[in-house]
Image 1 (tube, rainbow, N blue to C red):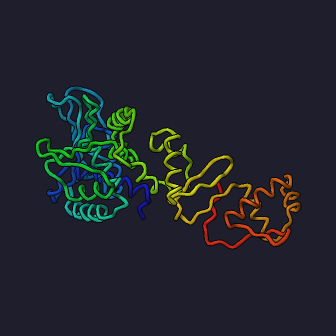
Image 2: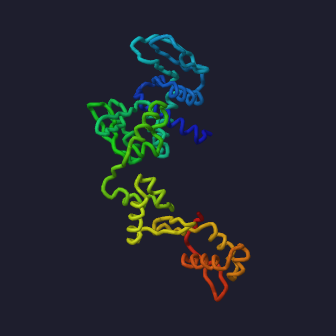
Image 3: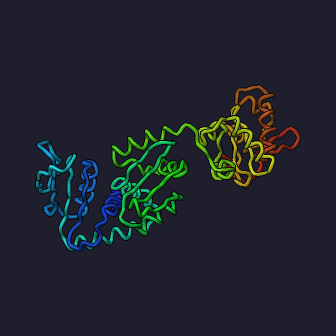
Length: 339
């Protein structure tokens, strides 16, 4: 059985192979690149799938230097004076294995959970980062023509793009798309491109959102409880700006807030969640049986007034009830989340 990590590595290699653009050959699998990290990963994955002994690594270098050596892989070294740096061609020749490989590619490409991993390999293989005047920041992936599965994956992840026939490349711009590249870690596979991506990503001083972008995305963010500080960091805005918007959406009945340990946690009004502190949770556990206030205070080793305040708060949330001086937990259909 293939492990989850192995499946991710396989999907990344499929992305590398798709970027290579040679899906017509029926007798061999090839991968060309000047990044030794990518060549090694491609070899490690394929050599676990197919028997060794049929792998060939062709190295081309402008001069004498130490070149990549893969265990169990026959190596051929050549001089290429036109090359600025060494590059490699990894070949595996076996018709039956190629048929098996293409079947695996078809299976992985059809599964949405592997879309980020495939795009990670695709970008590592042929991607580049272009920066320039007027804060131009562009992600490009060189290709002769659009590739239908890649189009599907980009659209699935909500990454807007255009294909430039003149540049022969996918062209991706805008903070929203960079953020998705960052969130899905599409940039991380190629070490040099990773470093270039991060330095460019960090150069965004202020995110210029479309009108109502934060408002429209808050509900999606708040499917789980978050503080205004956490939201301010997520949207790169001041905490005061977020608090103002949160209060406005609360007055519209779209959001609710819960107070825990001097912090306000915000969540969607339709989330069916109740957020309480660990101390209130302790009270709630004791109230599986009827208790008086002083009994709870003795068991929790706190004063009666503190216990009474927490009972009133829990009652307001519909989690406890009382009959005379006796308090007990109340049945609820809501999920109780302890923070």
